[in-house]
Image 1 (tube, rainbow over the protein chains, first blue to last red):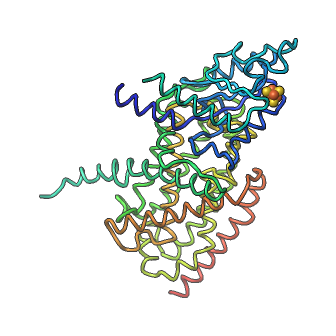
Image 2 (image 1 turned 30 degrees about the vertical axis):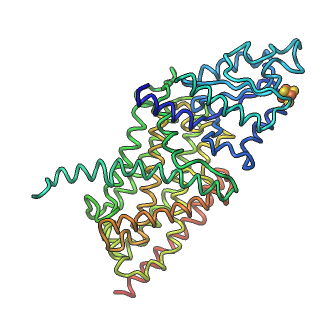
Image 3 (image 1 turned 90 degrees about the horizontal axis):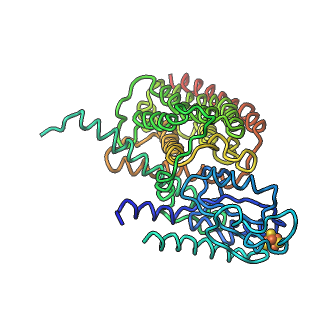
Length: 146
Length: 316
Ligand code: SF4
């Protein structure tokens, strides 16, 4: 790997900016995502900042089973994010539909709509799990580019 | 052997205290600000290389230019912002006298520092998305609120020193240190106005992220966004440097390394005050901000000017 690529990879690992998207979650997971940003867990020490526009974000943190209404929107938001971009599916719902699985109004799982990089199960997920997932995602990114 | 003066000027413009110094120190100040506010909020805060990593990552990301926006404007505005800020830095005394100083450079610096704000407005306006447009309107509204108190507060010391030259004002306060104490109200006004100019809490109304997404920068991504962020960081250095030069006597008559150390120490102190303001307060509404600027800051700085005129008559 050239030195330039190494520097770029390093910067990517050190500065993941998040965008939070609720795809029909019961709000349990969203509260936990907000939890992970509070002073107690302090995601900023890993360089993670919550951004509010898809244009600034690197990681789409999506929760919920993806209602049919939201499918169009999440696709559009995903396409608005600049490359390279990753998706974190947070919560049992986002992974597979969870308690809403089979419901007429949902598509059961974010991976039915957009490619997902990491699944974080739990109902709701614990903030520690979100941190762990973020660290694992960055680790996988590092390993894949070796 | 003498070094070519043109080469010296180039070094001054590009390396120290020009572009490279401003970049490094601006990124450092951004980290300092974030770290201090993290400590004040009982957090760990970002590591020391955070600002650098952010910038490199943004530089290496894809740049998306929306179809609906004004492409040329959208692309060139970030460079204008940076150019204006770096030019302003050349007129400030940083480690010794400024590269070029002349009567009236105070006015030039003030207007050069207005250019980034105008580019922010144009950036939001030319991206044509609703959030960016609202953000840019707020940028302008805010500009009208803080710009006048800022100018008024800087005029007071200029009247007292009897000159429009930044280096001479600094020299005057170095020679008459007790007069610095008489400028405390104007110093306070200038700090608050700088906070508004840098769009930091409590005046971060233009890019209030839980109301209007990313404000004027909503549509910006990758390299262009990186340059805008860099311009804001550099503006912090130049703004702190300007306040330092006008109110605190710049290098206090020293030059060389000692002068640079004094500059760094005093700008860090100013940024610490700005961070304190940021942590202590929550965001206000735009009408509250305008009222605060016009009902408190502007009269305060006018009273200061009046006081300075009387003081000047006493001095003869
Ligand atoms: S996983 Fe559980 S807590 Fe999270 S959105 Fe689904 S039902 Fe709610």
